[in-house]
Amino acid sequence: METAYVQARWHHALAEQAFGNFEGLLHAITMSPAMGHYLDMADNAKADPAEGTEPNENFARELLQLFSIGVVELKRDGTPLLDAQSQPVPSYGQAEVRAFARALTGWTYAPYPGGLAKHEEDQRYYGSPMVAVASQHDTAAKRLLRGISLPAGQTADADLRAALRNVFLHPNVGPFIGRQLIRHLVTGSPSPAYVDRVAAVFDDDGAGMRGNLKAVVRAILLDPEARSAPDANPRYGRFREPALYVTAFLRGVGAASDGYQLDEVTKAMGQNVFYAPSVFNYYPAEYRIPGTDVVAPPMGIHNTNTVLARSNFVYAMLWEDGIWPDEDIAGAIGTKVALAPWAALAADSRKLLAAIDDRFYGGAMPPGVKAAIYDALVQIDDAQERARTALFLATTAFQFQVGR
Image (tube, rainbow, N blue to C red; front, top):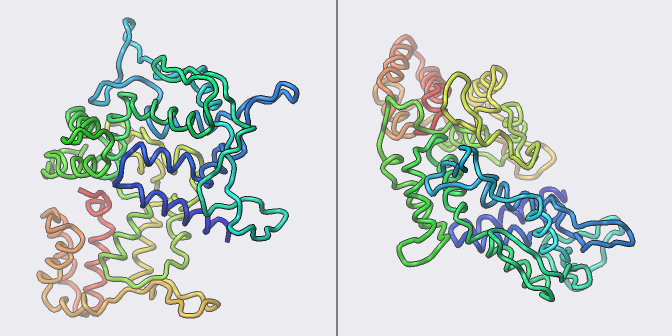
């Protein structure tokens, strides 16, 4: 129960900041008690020589490596900056990690509202941002990125805000975050020119603002590389990770669902939702399809078993009456597909295919896929069976599983 509560708070925070400013997003995730618990920033205290302890470096390291700048210096187009020996230039070192860890000491969970009684085994409140504990904050000077120093004597809040501003102003943030967003929204292998255009908008949204995420997302989705249809380009598009494949199918087919057991469905496909195996998420961010130079991160968890799991899920939805509701929950509905609207179109295979093309492919179903499905449909007399077959073939085709 605590896990669901914590995850809900975390997702609300992300939703609230998704189209705001990136610096505000960094601040929100840094102050999140969920993140504080996960990466050990909560109750992270200054060094204690008597006890031989040092500040925990987990959050400081991931703030730099995963959430903002990455491990090497980047040009604005996302390609590595090289030194005189043609080697990538590190964007930070252990000294900077230690300095950030010290700057972020002195935070803990907010107290329960109104002094509500807590179970002695549960002292963590996730409903509000973390709060400062002055006695646990390291007030010495710290040297951060690009030689910028924080003066001694600052409060925990002043050090935290200055540290995040130091990260936010690093030139890596635009290309590093821009490329990650492109990979999640459009294609795993964006061209350097595409990354450069997006990073330029991150640096300046046209009105002098840096880090305007709404402008960045708009630039990603309206870029020529996102709006064109390079059918012959194998680098274009993104493979739908399990959670997005399942939701795309259910929304497209018009299913009613309360979400029961869908986590088991995606787990069988390689994605245990809300339980990523590491801080690097569910799959490797730089995963390349073997034998190619095509970056397709979600394919890092795709294999023979998960191919079958996807097909089995669609088959169960269409032929096995979906997922039955949890009998212990009042009003539960499980997950059911409304087949009747599709069966009503099945008297005319071309009309059925046109509707499926429009709903699932945006009218861009490849001619070869459409012809193969049509050839299968004309062999079937029963309207419901024809509708099921058309939906199954269209949504298990690899061309649907790759969003383009």
